[in-house]
Amino acid sequence: MTAPFDVIVVASPVHPAGQVAAVVAPYLAALAARGGRVVEARGEGPCPTVVLVATGGSERRLVDLWGESVPLLLLAHPGHNSLPAALEALAAARARGGRGRIVYLAGPDDAAGWAGLDRALADAAAAAALRRARVGLVGAPSDWLVASHPDAGVVRRVWGPMVVEVAMERFLAACRAAALEGAAGGGIEAALRSLIREEHLDAVTVRCFDLIDALDATACLALAALNDEGVVAGCEGDVPSAVAMLWVRALLGTASWMANPARVDIAAGTVTLAHCTVPRSLVGAVRADTHFESGRGSALAGEMPAGPVTLLRIGRAGLDRLWLEEGEVVGSGSEPDLCRTQATVRLEPGVPEGLLAAPLGNHLVLIPGCHAARLRGWWETFIG
Image (cartoon, rainbow, N blue to C red; front, top):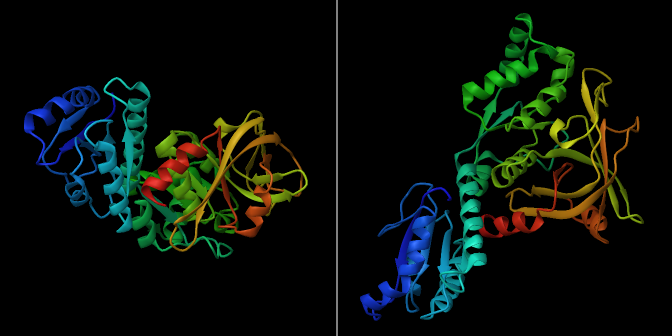
């Protein structure tokens, strides 16, 4: 059973009420078993809304149900011109900026169709979680992130999370206080955990290079630990990457790895990713090392297992562009002139060239497994 959701039945007034009731009865029974509750009007809260398109001739009523930001899920069936009505209504809604998705059921016993609705409801739940989320930006984005510094209002409007700005001075003071109390690693992990509790954060991204000179310590181990525990934690104050990692966590329930595309081999069709932190749950053998650029503090060198992965990046000023590709990890290195965790990913022909031709920023997010279809479907419904 999914989380509770609202169900609105829409039909043309020319259809007799008894006929409409007979058509929708088996669908309503299946929806109720999934947690659906029939309502007369759309609510204002985060609860997903499924609109059961009972008959054709209901297009105007369907369009009038659309809100400004929260998509609708239209449930269509094979009788009474339900599907044509859903197609017309969604086309009209999208023409004026509305968002939504049609789920088609071949009949009340269509197991594949109901599975599609379950996925659509899970997608809506992930979108609702993003609208409730709070992302802590500790210090400003690093100076070199000239394409990865979106306005907080854009993040809120397009993706949903609220960006909570935390002054670096406040964070450094918390780190020093934690260190005086005996916390390891310059007090960074303890201070991050306190900050997450105090500000009710679901994610953080830290201007981490400032910590090296101020504390002679790095955030790499702390960020890895938080990611393994379900709190998204990114580097360098990169807000787009933190939002992408939060999206992955909300939709897929897994940790992800934020890394630099350090090398491209066009002939081999590969991209080598590298960064000094990685969730331990995503790698096999792991060892401690120093931070690559500074040679100070602590970093993680993990061995990325071979197998399928998904790479993504969101970007542009409006955070409304997506780069999304599937590939396969074919190597995990330990070269001294790269950040400590290194993974070489083989991509489809032409993809590395496309990455060079139209980049969205200097970090990519890696997810184990093949998830491009699920992510792209969500994106097209809620963002694209």
